[in-house]
Image 1 (cartoon, one colour):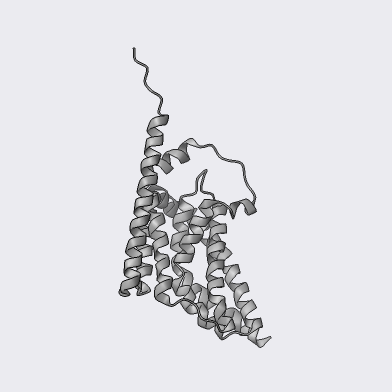
Image 2: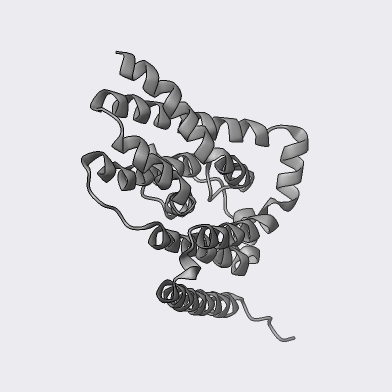
Length: 245
């Protein structure tokens, strides 16, 4: 019983210390809610991404080895790719969100299968290099009772974090600022987040990982560029011709 009592404040402290920056990311996500990108996608994605971080850290509880931190830093490519994709498709996304009608509410199970959810989960997971670095020794030094108590605190606080970020976006000053500048700011925040993850994890100090990062980034840029060109061509082809008088 004493181990559980000790584990609860320990879990609260560890979660708060490693997820303060997530509040900012969640604020930006909630400011982009529209007919396509819903609140449930953000909450489901946050739980999926955080659950993946916990799973990646759990092997330490059983005494096994995990990937070194520089390899974990490669996850920084994910928010960079998502940020570039949003930057390239910004005008298209804004016009689509204005044109599309409000879709019917779907179940939470369906939300977990949505690409919007996976996008949020990818950013959450990629931003979790520090989380894994702290959770690994924390889990390794825990008993079964302490581990369950810590995980209970962790997943409860994920919901608290989402609720707090959503309520902050409802404050007039914050809501107006995010609504006005949020869509333009998010891609650059995601790109900066990815670069910070790569640098902070010392990934770029390894020549092999540096080459892998550059090659992967170039492939992402080429793929995104082609898909953007195809989208533009499809939009041009679908535009009705003006009848000649």
